[in-house]
Length: 459
Ligand SMILES: Cc1ncc(COP(=O)(O)O)c(C=O)c1O
Image (cartoon, rainbow, N blue to C red; front, side, top):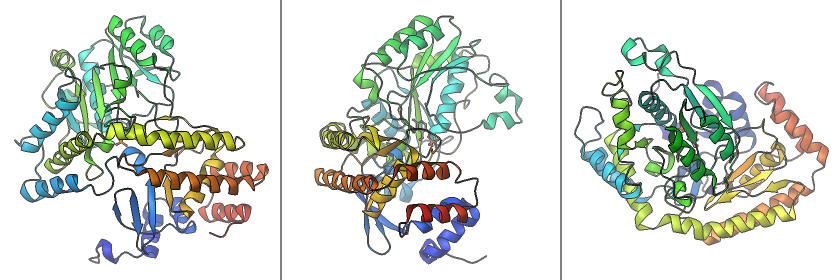
């Protein structure tokens, strides 16, 4: 085994390793679109090894909320790493207390019991376990069509310790799916009094980006209260200011029973996630005969990650980033809406709120081609990662620290990209969509060859 470090990995070796050990099609695409090796990042920009700079309007789907390499957060992480990067459970770490104090400063007062995890999916699962313990006998969960809460399949399923599995398995939750924004459907689903919880994103993220009608969440909260159903608000994408309020629930004044947080929480330095719940939920869960300490948690979250999270919350508050998202986001949202008016052949609408914005495209090929054209102009956007959708939403999620001039640069590049697209015939869009939907089933080299011959652009 050779003792290499990241510095010894040149572009070709990286692409070969990614292709061999990770995803051959994606690696080939990265090669073909001349994607550079990331060298460093700062603020709103990511720099390649050759010195070229890319404006980051993808932001890892909301992770880089306070900008790349935020000074205050980096200082907190380095300090924790040097002193005691220890982990819960079984330790008394000051960073945990500091994080909990910061969370109670920003969350509604009732949401003051915290469970930690390393990823959004992990705390979604913790919430699900809390819900089933707190509402014994109820097997149904209401979810929103197009919602996203993570992709774990259930480590509990293969756990060999009966006492940990008993109350949860066999568990194929009896799901009731409602359309986004359809509060009446939620109310109907809850009428039987047998639903344990409603899982909802206050603004539907994922590939969709839908801002629900203002009355949706209050109406869902009322229906939950009347039927003893728990309301779980997933703010993993919306939390900490992206929508122009500290939390998206604030737009409608609703306080859920559980709120899920992650992504932006550590400024992109380290993964951590939190499920914050009310004392009532926790007490109800504790009354279950299947309760035992640790039932909601894993073993990993680190002191350094918690220090990063506390510092990020301080940064968001001291710079009033939610207000900035609203103020700066207005120009971006208006610019995107103007693009829709000018290019209805390619664009459907420009949904969004605050700096959680996007362009709903006519088809997957429009999304991909805009994305490539923008990358060629030094701007990264957030791909929906879903070629099967008819009208995917290309995301614009800059850091909330972004400058107004950067937004203007993005809007100018977008207009140029759309004009480039105007010169492409309709049949080409159909053919590229066909190809994109099969890109992981066809041999990667063939996909590239067909893309190249169809597009006739020199990658
Ligand atoms: C709203 C929402 N919930 C949950 C998740 C899952 O988070 P993770 O990828 O950290 O498991 C995501 C990730 O994109 C998300 O956007």
